[in-house]
Length: 245
Image 1 (cartoon, helix red, strand yellow):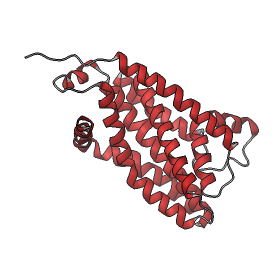
Image 2: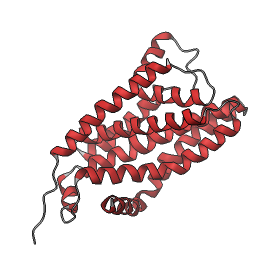
Image 3: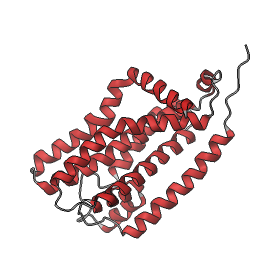
Image 4: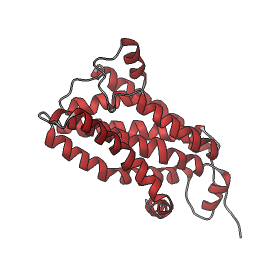
């Protein structure tokens, strides 16, 4: 546990070098979409709740599918693992400390968004909202871990992962409604796990679900299970060689 806490502290120190990138990914870009849509769509309770719920999920994507995924890819490089060779720590513990760091980083935005959503929403299921957010965090975090482990080259990751984050946002009703979309496009949206995360979160805030709730739970549960098995097996195959001085 102490090693994980040390890893979190080290990660927050390193994030000072990328503070503007962090600020842009977690705050500026997601909020810019919200403000533009509110200006053109009018400010009323339902619109605010809908957009803020989208902002919550967009923040998770910016953090876990953007910054965290690239950081995992960077961590798996031999020259980076060598930096940790003098510490008695496993790759799983390092990845856990990274994951907790980015969860802590997103918590303030999520908590403020929850307060705003609850204030503007007419119907709120608090327990279901907490459950929906926990499932969303685990799902998107594991997708980010999977991408970081899959893409071996950090330079390729810095080009591909931001593009994939944009695709996840585009093909999910984060800032637009799926009600009047063509059936073909709606079917494409349902392939995206982000759509099911949004469906759970918005259902807790009183909106009609985008997909069948049972199907969304099954889809995300299977996804979490499969990715967890892949991630754990991958970390077991990676060792940090000890240095002897």
